[in-house]
Length: 440
Ligand SMILES: [Zn+2]
Image (cartoon, rainbow, N blue to C red; front, top):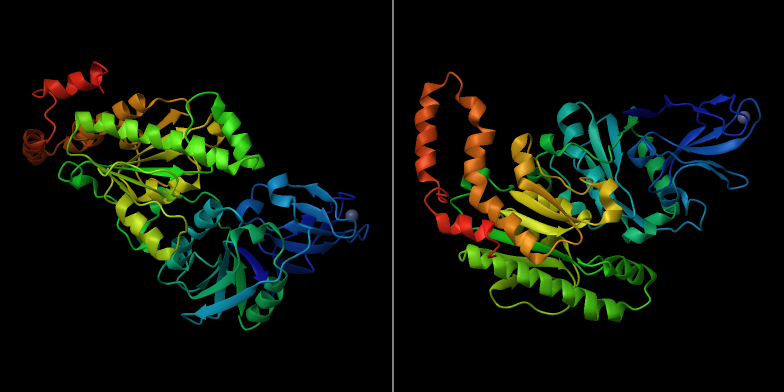
């Protein structure tokens, strides 16, 4: 945590003369950035420097105030720092008044960044009960605020507004923090640890209980993105460029998205051949094309808190959620038993940044699969069938084996579970052949 009031415990090197170690004159809440205003004691150069919080921890922006020069910081984070600020309404909800508080600034223009920063909240609620947690969030994320939060400061704005400074935010915060004895800024890790985070404290939906894996009807949910569709061939990159440049949204909707729908349908058809009782669902933003009646279509053209929660309930009943890489995979992977992610080549370096699966150890590899963007429906179907059919056997052999040492009672339990396994691979040669002989 970083102390910011009444005094800050940070200091920064001057970017101009590189000699002055400067204590901030004040800390400013600009929106996505929480920055120190500094004047170099040696050369009197005035500059802004991100505090080590959120993405400012690993990719801090440093900028000269007078000439608006960016000294350091990635483009995505610094591009619009000096653009005309926007003024937005901010509201406060107070649940608990405490003398000392921690502020967690979750603002960002990317959905996944906001969500991941917000997922730090329970750490501070649990580990620092003597301090009150204050969340700064964009409207639309209130439904995910965990119980125990002391205050919520909601900025009523579209996510895209957070590319620019929010001119009304700093005055709002400065006025509010006067009443506290001490104020700290949460580091707000941009990728908190999913293995120590209970997602149900945010969504109020319990994630899939692995002990029920074989008891529940196999359920597969595909998360469709119309702005980043699953395209098999090299034209995938062409589609990305078309969508990015907005040359022809109609073309994208009319061809690439319908092509994606077709691949999803073919994938599910093959899984259905192998495991007829499987239930299939699709979710996502958009409503291009349609699916046959045996695939339940939950897609929506706009989303609100109630709809997002219903999607979470669906993920929590899903043995597998599948979809293309992106923040669209965060809540699905956090709630479902397993996931299959289609990872485009240009996102290889970002692997796992959009996954919030809580599993650890060998089972996490079994339940978390990444495939290339050129993958065929048949390959995804084979992977999905193998995950469903072999899960219990994998778990007994690979995940819980160590627990048997010196526990003779467990052996009886082990044998009982073995005999009750739903998918008796050794007896059911048909299923095995179906997978290995490429008949699906
Ligand atoms: Zn200087």
